[in-house]
Length: 236
Image (tube, rainbow, N blue to C red; front, top):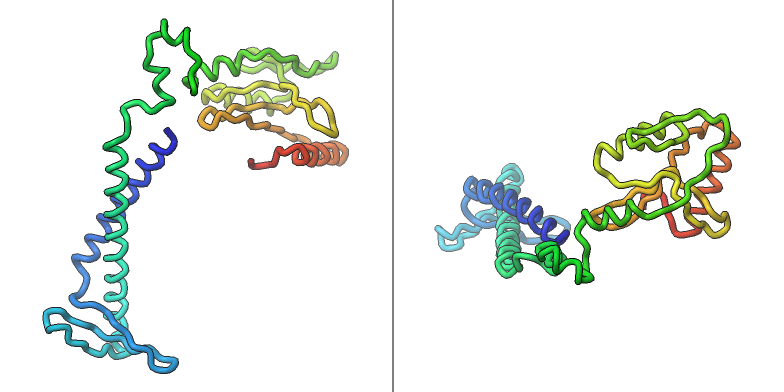
């Protein structure tokens, strides 16, 4: 499904390039560019089919003509490549099934779906199962300020309210302080475990909102290093 989306974007881009190059070629000068190397110098020539391939030397003062002819040759090569790639993409879409293998399950009757283990669950089912996983979050200490999100869940700071509410409003599935085991540190509680539905991968979001506090920063850096030692890298 991702391949199909990427190919559609690629086709749009190629069509744009095709229009631009066709316009540029319609305004390009007649003839082709040839060159001859003489020592360290290069001499450029214009060869005109209308004049039976007669070669005309392009003097240094007329370098713009050489540039236009060189650009013309480049644009023609680009256009040929674009046409070939568009033909391949169009052929791919022509033979592409109405429903790819991962989509077959979603078009079946509910009665059949109950009896089948699909190779790829629809997003809504996958999200529902992911959100319904039971877990024990980190306990709150007594006398801590109470902050609640739109969903009614308790968080530890005003910043976390903002993050949680934004994720919720954008329809991005998340868990708050879901436990994660890190070798070398034991069980930790990332502020947010966010689900990338498209890639079906989890992203751990640590807010780290007090990095101006030295002790907090030292502890946070140690935690980040431990994440990386366990294969979780910032930005990935």
